[in-house]
Image (cartoon, rainbow, N blue to C red; front, side, top):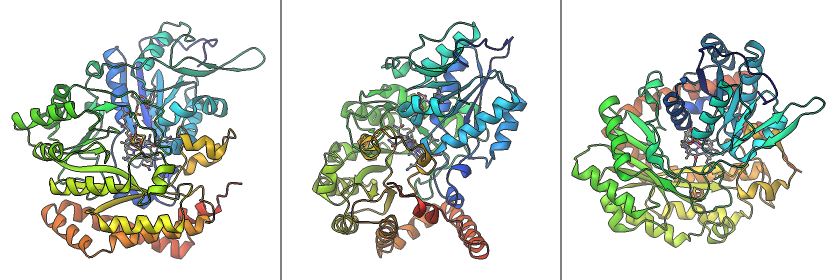
Length: 507
Ligand code: B12
Ligand code: SF4
């Protein structure tokens, strides 16, 4: 609700509902995949809920995707709660779905301000607010302090113009104008953040599972032990947390792990930091705390091949590290240079071997279809993945996310918001020179097939299953859902998103 409008009389209603829009609406044709993918709650909403609660508000969280809720069910739940405020977290792929929810809430609860934030808003706040008038306020960057500042102003009927980090359309007598406040200063002291509000999540931790075969034994929870990444890979959207790395102290991370372990029985932690090992000192301190206190938990994290060393890897293993995700991207040095990845293929090979020798599983994160990709670079990636000690790889279809440096160079200033709905890494929206979208899609399947049909793969997953049978039951469930999906497609025509993607052509 822009500053000129009179906020509704709130009385004692300090309820705020924080929502993740439903996934089905944003990955059409791929609904079956959610049975094996990461079903983590939004850590961002957990942080926001904890922060506003400390300031006297009453948050609740709707994780619509996890509970298979439709837009209508989400709206009905919000209307039932009758909050004073609604907050929606937005990935680029979820913007249209979020807007539909906002539109319906505006109809049912017209005086309830709708606040949006998240990775999409951090990179595209102005464009989004101009395009989607059903959102009232956009919060750019990390949201804890900005949201509290905003809510307090609205509670007191005060103007919000000077709230840093806020973008909104100011309603004028004749025309509306965009108000863009400067970015909110970065809060370097992460230790002051309250414990994320896991207590507000229904059915936590049982309902929130990471991807199949991507953890040993649950229950699982995620922690962002640091924020920010100092690197500038051209495909990566770092607009929320920026380049300045700040982190919890090792002691605080240890306390959060212990809290999750003792309160919820969590056995595995997924650290979602962009670069968990950004500080060797902090990583070492945390490992020592875990080892010295005998905390028996496993954990996984993301790192870069150019920041790990054998001694650190051995210490991490001793402290329970089970998997490290490395953004390897490609088997071609030429392409890595084009991405500004600043890590060569031989460095990846070395780090993967060190990680393997330390007894930690590496997850290889790759990308196909980046500008400059050719038949040769694809062949190099195919050969590379088979020549290193990897048993799991994620292959993303290159997507120029808003906020990534490559976005504007590919699209110029002409923002194509009509493609936002497809930006989930599962659709090729763009094909490299000399290739069609169909060709690059066919290559995508070939790279994955050639990796997962290696003789070592079934052997590895058989042993995994024998050790952790719960994964097999989930796989069976997926096989059933996938079979039904295929059958429906056969009987009623294709409902695959591959065909949708093929229709998308950028001129
Ligand atoms: C963990 C993670 C996931 C998890 C969990 C996602 C989730 N539900 O939060 C999983 C694996 C499910 C996932 C999936 C995807 N992810 Co992801 N993911 C991440 C990662 C690594 C960390 C997110 C996180 O927890 N951060 C810590 C919390 C505290 O931060 P936060 O959620 O951003 O919230 C803060 C602010 O954004 C803001 N905020 C957020 N929401 C709101 C709402 C309101 C009202 C307000 C006021 C503020 C606010 O305040 C919060 C607290 O400071 C980020 C990278 C990154 N550095 O953020 C990528 C990232 C968010 N993912 C990304 C993408 C593209 C995806 C996918 C679309 C595709 C893919 N290839 O992975 C899918 C689809 C997700 C979906 N459901 O739509 C992109 C988003 C780009 C974009 N513009 O959309 C990122 C930025 C990676 C990147 N650098 O490109 N992801
Ligand atoms: S890909 Fe990884 S290393 Fe590169 S900028 Fe993004 S988070 Fe940082």
